[in-house]
Structure formats: structure tokens, C-alpha cells
Image (cartoon, rainbow, N blue to C red; front, side):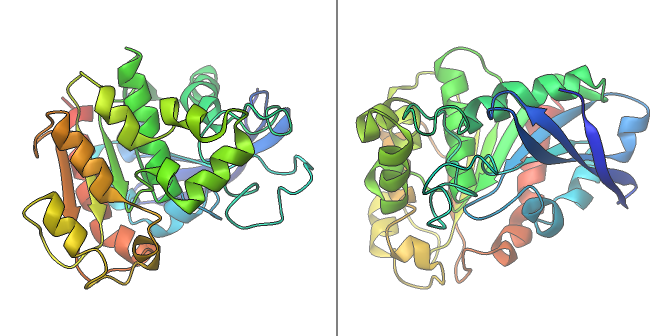
Length: 309
């Protein structure tokens, strides 16, 4: 799993480097990722924050458009930007739709035999990439990890974090998400992904790959921040539902793909207050990187509280 450096660019005093390697987890395919190392990484190991992108994206979208690098340089945090799926598997149908297959790996481990050899983004992100970085002796302190993401990547960040806590691993100290797919077993994107990738379909997904279902059964303390787009700050769940289609340019929210109100209700019913699970509405934004980059620094500073503790 030796790394090959593809490119390197100086940014905010640090370095953004693109690497590729042959991934065993993804069935022997080449995998690309970007890694930002802040200036402080030249003198000591730094904590790492993993960013998971959304549907159709690559390892480049968050690195180039998220507005994360400046704040990360200031806080002394490395950022890992994985790809969103395996590429070049040659599986029939994987390139037919933009919301399934290539660019849409949904951060799970496939159990449908058709996809199981290659579509293992859950293990790729949580196990393989940290192992590859550690083997390369890069200046990263893997005892201090957090994770965040957007849309499908927000779903991935939430579920990887919650699974880690549920199974006692505590790999990540905190999680945040921009407009995440929050209850995928109940939205068209999630249902399409789960019935395609998983042999057990939605029932299998319910146990491991749905943040709303996971937080219902969790007992551990959590550190969660979610930003989504809605009309205004709300009192709580009922107001969120009433305002769902007002004052937002996020068409995917309107279409019922995101469902943050379901996640919020499940979190509150499980006893998590606004300190442990903070869900913020941001009026008038859409689903794009204009939204993400506006609040990117907030998310970096949120994670810094836990990564540097």
C-alpha cells in the first residue's frame, strides 16, 4: 500500500498533497485522496479531521471549495479528503445513474455480491486510510481524530461516528455535517443505495447505516453539530417541520432527501440536549459549496475544541 504523490500545493503556509495507492479494501483499484498538513506539522504531529464529500464529488471538491484550509492552518489540524466511491470497478450499471455507483458509495460496506468486492468505503475511510497514512510515517496523531461531511458525506460522517461510539471504539472525538442525509432508510437516495448495495436491503441498513436509527440506541455522550437550510431558528421539532419548505433554496431538503427533523427528534427522545446535539438552521442557502464555505470555519473551530483538548 505504498503511496504515490500525484501533486502538491502550498496553502496557508501548509501543504495540500494528492496521493494515490492500490487499495486492497476497494478490490485492488487505485484510490486517490487529498491530505492537508498545516504549518505546525513540520515540527510535531497534528490531529486529523476527515471530510466526506457528497454525491458525484471526488476527493477534490472539499479541498478546493470548502473553505477549510485557512482555519485548519490556524488551528493546527490536518484534513483528510477521501474519494466518494471506488472508481473503475467495471460493474454493470455502476455508471448508469448519478446517485448510485461511481461517485455514490454511501460510505458503507456492500454485502450484495455484485458490489461486495469493491464498494467498501466504510472500511476504506475508518481503517485503510489511517493505516496507509501511519505506514507512510506522516506527522499525524491518530489518537486525535474527528470527522465531518456534506449531504451523502454528512450521512457518512454521522454513521461512522455513531458506529464507533456504539461499538466502543471511540475512533472520532466529534462529528459535524452540512445538510446531511439524516434518515436514509426513509428517503429515495438512501433506499436506492441500500437496496442496491446491501443483500439485506433497508433492514440491514437500519442497523448500521442510518444516523437517526443509530442515535436512538446509543448511550454514550456525543459531540455533534449539524447545519441545514431552513427558514429561521426554530423552537424545536414541530417548528422545524412546519418551516421545512419555507425560506430555503435547498431543493433536496424540499424533496425529502435530508430529513434532519427526524434525526433531531430521535436525538432529543434519546435524551441528548442542545449541547451534545446542536442542529442549526441557516436561512436562504442552497445545497452547494457556497453554503458549506460560509460555515466551514465554524465547523473547524467546533472540532478544534475536542481535537486539541
